[in-house]
Image 1 (cartoon, rainbow, N blue to C red):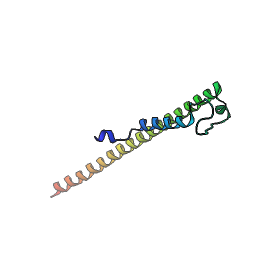
Image 2 (cartoon, one colour; image 1 turned 90 degrees about the vertical axis):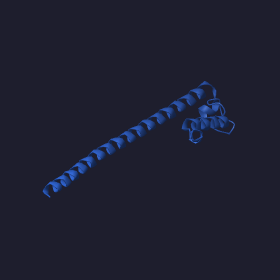
Image 3 (cartoon, rainbow, N blue to C red; image 1 turned 60 degrees about the vertical axis):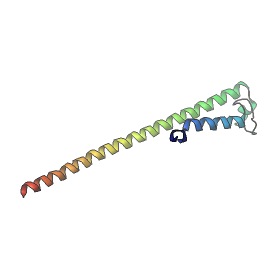
Image 4 (cartoon, rainbow, N blue to C red; image 1 turned 180 degrees about the vertical axis):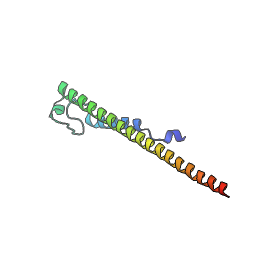
Length: 107
């Protein structure tokens, strides 16, 4: 049951695109139902409008890929930082355990 309640980002993104395309009509086909624009080339429609729409879609897809790559890199850096912190803390634990052993031998 919980599996079906988890948000599906891709599904939400696809739904958002469908809703936007319903309002705008087909991308590159001229001004849409919502009175939308997107620039004079897209308003005019035709091959130039379709090309402009395709270029915009490609731009945003690349931008999204760049953002995802940056996010993955950030998370990897966080993981590396935490691993180093774990190693540092483990050395501290070992140092303190050594002091305890030394105190036991001194008794």
